Amino acid sequence: MTTISNDLFEDDLDLPDPVAQQRYAHLVGLDHVKMRLAKEAELILQPQLLREWSLRTHNTVLPAVDRLAHRPPLIIFAGDVGTGKTTLAETFADAIARRHRIDVRVKRLSLRARGTGAVGEMTRLIGTAFDGVLDEARLAGTTRPTILVIDEADALAQSREASQMHHEDRAGVNALIRGISQIATEAPGVLVVMCTNRIGALDPAIRRRAAAEFDFARPDATQRAAILTSLFEGIPLGPSDLQELVKLTGPDERGYGHTYSDLVDRVLAAVCLTAYPDQPVTANLIAEQIRRCPPTPPFTAQS
Ligand SMILES: Nc1ncnc2c1ncn2[C@@H]1O[C@H](COP(=O)(O)OP(=O)(O)OP(=O)(O)O)[C@@H](O)[C@H]1O
Ligand SMILES: [Mg+2]
Image 1 (cartoon, rainbow, N blue to C red):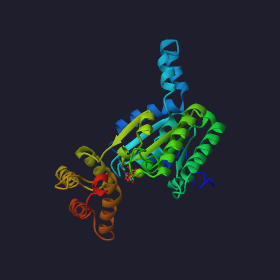
Image 2: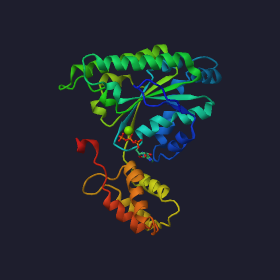
Image 3: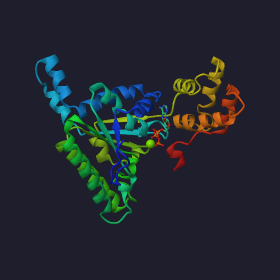
Image 4: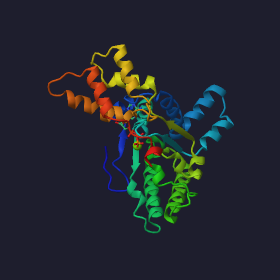
């Protein structure tokens, strides 16, 4: 991991990295997203692979390859809270780095890039951040691709159509669009990933530019069974115990069930801390702690 002085970014993550590999592997229920994303990202980061495929299989570079190569290097992760958007954005390139034996740098734009609201400040900060990414990417070329993660992207790219929008926010959207276009033309090997739980608040001009948009949802019954089994590996849980826990973590009269992060971060800790130091973990104890840790309301219900 490298620390850079520019405080518009969190610390860089350099992949491959064993911690990223493990965080990625522990994500449940996202196999379809992982598969599609791997291809999308691979072809944006390593555009020559598509040309090589076309030459190999068609003996020529198909026009379709050129069209695909000109897609904007932007992918959007949208969906419910605690469903793995940030984790996936920060770690998915680990698999690409390993497969192609290359280094990939993950740069994470800080919310500080939003500034304090002073006129022109956000535009200047976003411009500076993109200049930094472009300078670094030009030096690295496509041999060391970059993923630029813009988390909580709605904070920066709020719809310009929102009537209450401050002039400064609109300027931020324009700066973002400019930055993404610049990356598309000047820095092959950079991919921007925006995460949001409020896709409706994201500016339509940004959404139109995305090569792909992925939706993230709370775990269904099968996915809850998978995550509970994995979290409580080593604890003897019979099929009826598991069925009961799956039911307890599903939607009830509230209309929503537990998120992945409710289970991974809150229920697991509550269970272990209750059992420790002198009790074993049992199905009853897990059920009791699930009842005590109600699910996080969906974003719309919170706001
Ligand atoms: N699909 C999943 N499988 C396993 N664990 C998950 C999954 N999704 C989230 N988690 C766990 O939940 C925690 C929060 O995940 P993360 O921050 O990636 O969610 P998010 O979608 O970005 O949430 P938010 O919308 O609140 O920003 C992490 O500890 C992560 O490992
Ligand atoms: Mg997040």
